[in-house]
Image 1 (spheres, rainbow, N blue to C red):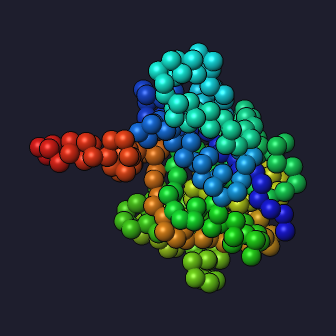
Image 2 (cartoon, rainbow, N blue to C red):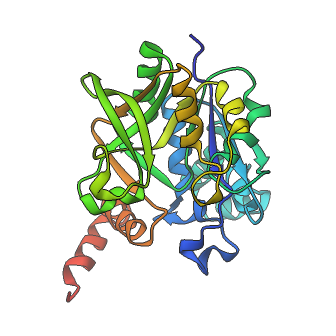
Image 3 (cartoon, rainbow, N blue to C red):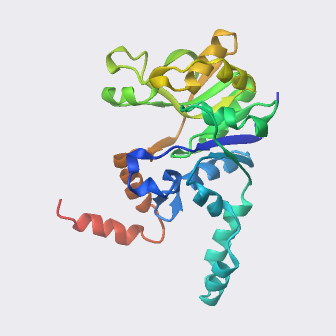
Length: 292
């Protein structure tokens, strides 16, 4: 079975939930203390053994390319003058951590379109997909857990997270599942953003995927679905109906951070700030002193 060597990160959305902040700044570049969201996503891929990073971008997304590019000579000179060697190492490491390929999104609206746009860089091999505005902290990394399942079972593999609040089920793709072994389930169907009262389970399947190259043809065969959009889940369901098994991996030892939502983004910033070695003590004291 082919190894997973490439990951596609869709990053072409408008970020409307964060306007006006995202009018000129990619939502994927929103900072979590001192690193943008998309850097956490890239680091997860690298820690999982994937070094070819394909980022699908759109208008006003140049900041993403600049972030993962080599630092400017002016910046390095400024840091050298200030004796900030550790910062020099950190900004240089960003560009050296992986091989970056950038593709402009083309086609109709929907989360399946950036996947289809990445086809020329994938060719005929399985690959991973991770969204650029959310991530999971886990040990081992989420994508590594998924790669291990793919190497054992093949097919399509999707990361899964149990949703605690029933009312939140309508925000995700929820799976109708059959247990396979331990934290692995076979997916019978995925219902995109269901009514909470009719959701088939509380396992949200989203955030990361391992897909076969057949997904491209499936996406091309789709007609616009819910909201007139091209949905990745519809292409996955099509391949499942044609005999390709689909598995969910409930991620172990993990915490999901949905930084595409205002409230969840602020929770993420606070939680990771409390773990940041440079500020955690003073920040914790600041929070305790607040008169809430």
